[in-house]
Image (cartoon, rainbow over all chains, first blue to last red; front, side, top):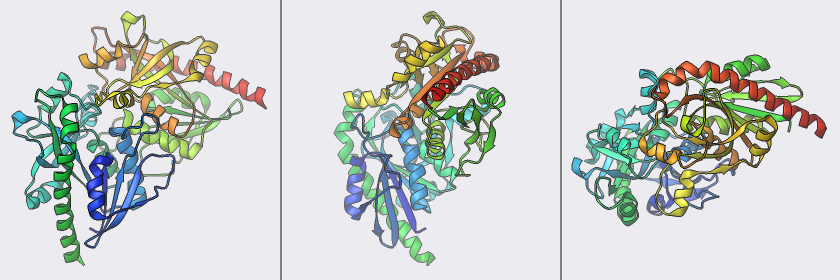
Length: 241
Length: 241
């Protein structure tokens, strides 16, 4: 695998990766959209990284499944990657054994806020489970735990959300991966999701407080594991040459 | 306004409109995507209609904000419309005075399932309110009530969703309009949302039962008002010539 595109929601999550890999900004094809791309070379890998960009009306980072859908669509078209990596931060349950800074590989990716009780097929479409055969292999080689990456458009957690999230053994709750997976699947592009815990959703502090307090630390730990993953991918690419 | 693109989520909602306007299927530019387009001419208007299409894995109509995002992006690029019309069905509250078959024009469009309590700006971004200056004008001319079109990815309604939906005076609860509005806004394309009530979310019967029972009736009433709207737009276009 030679061409790797990283999809990262927020600039704050992407900044240490862009800096360490010395990536340079490149133009996206459609200037109407807010997503921003960076490109470079790392140990023989052609790396691109795309962030959703800043919403022009609200002046915040564009988070959630709609910007992730557009970013992934445009990134696949522009960079035709062999592999997508969605790197980002997440919430997790303390009482399922998670701690701030834990880094997980998504062995399954699903929505938790698309409840469509119109029969089995719509129900399954709503969940949108994406199973990554690659993920367990790379998790083992990197010494990472596999988790179920659960995607929804709210940062907080309603009781209804919690009941659905608790169906899964180890949870990485975040806001983009299932939308990225849905687009990746259409274009038959494999996807690895690597998620670092910023907040414990069953703690007394709100998710928002923890998220802001731990974003820098979790992003730092995230980048360390992303680099390890790139090192593994680079050594494989060399073997394949 | 000459070029009008209708965005309709489900084939069942689109079928009577396609038939009555005698639209023919045209290819979308990217065959990887599931969305399908139909085109034709109606009283001097260049009409296109795009549906999200059938999900290839689950064999259901692609509903919700992610397919709506892709459909709108691709439709605007391919058809460069002067006006978008999002026509579809919705849920509504009986105790706010709604009845099955009522047809509303969206004077405001917002999400109800993007709760992002990271300060005022993220909170507002999550709500994503889109106010349509055109909508009230056309609602008056067509004798339609204005409603707040509230978008979320679940067909059912959690207590958390209900509390947010009840903030609005008259509600059209559906699954696509805010995502369509977000893309429309980026491309500076005006949008009208016309929604017909299939289910009363505060009735004892589940939304799913009512939705399936009333989809054909509500789609029929929807199309009648869509044609009235097209007639008004056609007479305006003629006056402008």
